[in-house]
Image 1 (spheres, rainbow, N blue to C red):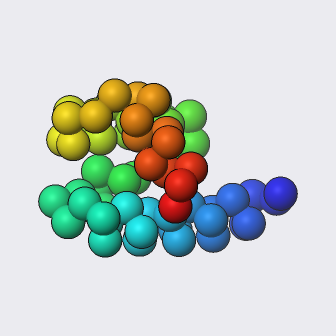
Image 2 (spheres, rainbow, N blue to C red; image 1 turned 45 degrees about the horizontal axis):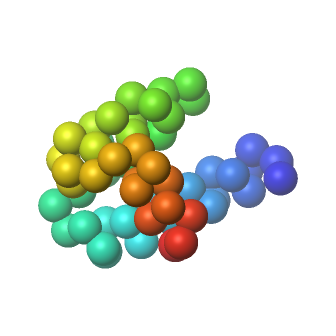
Image 3 (tube, one colour; image 1 turned 30 degrees about the vertical axis):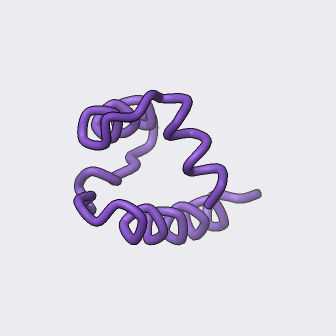
Length: 61
């Protein structure tokens, strides 16, 4: 997978997460290069889920 495909997949996944969890904002789901752990931390706090739970949710989308 190249970078463009990865970005496209993330945009699609981000939309699905916002549908599933209406309280999420674009800022919550900002995935800057090298900042994946920071984004997951924000989601853990906001959604009250563990890192593993979030990874399962994202993988299921």
